[in-house]
Amino acid sequence: MSNPYQDGRGNKDRSITNPAGQGSEMPRSKSGKVTAAGDSTAFLIGEAMTGGYGKGPDILHACTIAVERGEIAVIVGPNGAGKSTAMKAVFGMLNVRSGRVLLDGEDITALTPQDRVVKGMGFVPQTSNIFTSMTVEENLEMGAFIRRDDFRDTMAQVYDLFPILKEKRNQAAGELSGGQRQQVAVGRALMTKPKVLMLDEPTAGVSPIVMDELFDRIIEVARTGIPILMVEQNARQALEIADKAYVLVQGRNAHTGTGKELLADPEVRRSFLGG
Image 1 (tube, rainbow, N blue to C red):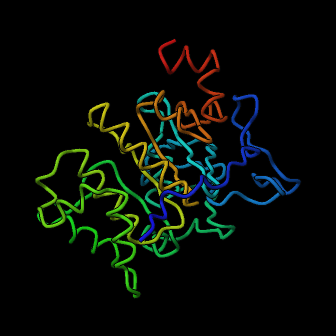
Image 2: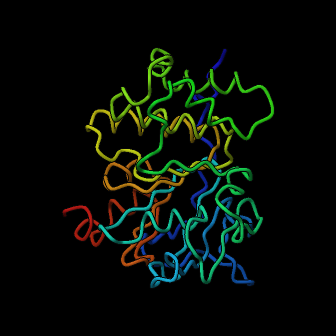
């Protein structure tokens, strides 16, 4: 069986980014919508999101993040910048008091996280993202809970992507290393056949070698055309693989551009990358 994760990279159109590599505004149409090439909305966009948790204060302030098919979009910034909060807002885990979230042109702002999964959003939280007492294969099967079709081909694709999981498929997931657990979590999300994959700090707590391997696998997933929106604390390494990147500061867009543009931006380097 051929591995679909080895095809050429998907959409490389970077027209949605700010070519200057800075600023909080994305290109807009006359209607005020944030747009990609051809005056169409991005595949997934959290547009001008303002909100916070429960009745607490706003953490996000007119924050916009978006990703197109086949792109890797990365959210970076200092601790407490609202990176994971922005991701959770897109996934429906907190109140968006103003702004909206659109998936493939459909306004999903009012939907629950569960309904967003059914619509095609795959979300991998930073922690508590596997069933430790279940085997690797049982974890993957749990990922297919919303499907009514035969998911064996998808499981074979996940095993092609993460060969170590096939080797350890009958082992309890809680016995795996940190990097292998993250592979299980990503694999389980892929079992839903998501239209977009969202990863909250997928390399947290793993070694540099494991981080590089995970990033390689993330690139392979994006090559199939699945958009990937990722929050990452390892900013320099994440920007190196990013088609589009957002630097958040205090819940606001501070810099937007391609990964290469932000890596080359003196202010970004000085403020967030250690020079």
